[in-house]
Length: 307
Ligand code: PMP
Image 1 (cartoon, rainbow, N blue to C red):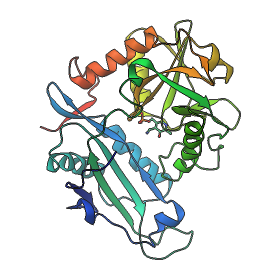
Image 2: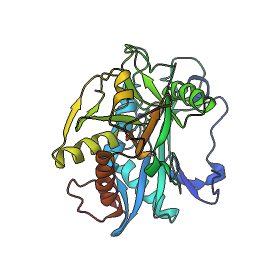
Image 3: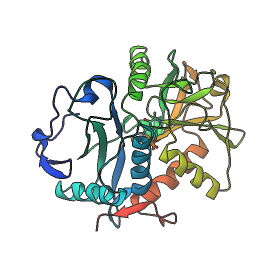
């Protein structure tokens, strides 16, 4: 995907030309990975463009920053407004939104607190993360030899840029082995999540997903799917999942802002269920996309319209 570089990026409170949104080579973030970020989507619903769960994403950004003692010098309300402004100024109606905060340029040493906290918001048109047909056909995944970070090493609940060095190892291994995506286990060998997605499993009409303690990012799509499933009177259990459950599941799917709801059709070349998108997966996808299209009521108040 190549960027259309004609747009504006919100950079430390001001809109700058796309190509002018640069940092110094000695910024702390470049050497020590000191960043936190978000991935958000704006959908062109039938009732106009709307950002999905803006409040929760901004809250998670600020929580990620809090864990790393980073003070973003704007209120969450101001930052949310800046996100909406960035979409409008770039005249987009459906896009991916990438806010980030990071430690900038002042001095260089591991200790970060003397480096300023900088922030940015970029938006661009972006299609389906795992491919258009993946939403219907499903993806082929492999269990990674790389584990998610052990508790008390890198906090998994912070969406920190540096966590994605771990994700990159898993993703590169998956692609090298001809898989679309990786599933990672936690320190204890229990199922955690994908390199950039949460995972759900269906067995005998019960939906399972690993709990927060399984070294995962508490996904906002994960939370949305749990809410939608409960609304359909489906039983959802957040509990530890042993690896072999992946092989004998009736259905498996990923959730994430980028991946949305993507079925998994094989794990380690073992076919999941019937090998095609399962019934419950389809039901949840339909519910999810109906909200994003503006076809069904936004009963949970998940959409923020650009107006
Ligand atoms: N886990 C990881 C590691 C991720 O990068 C993402 C994407 N942000 C998710 C889960 C899904 O989170 P969300 O639904 O909030 O996008």
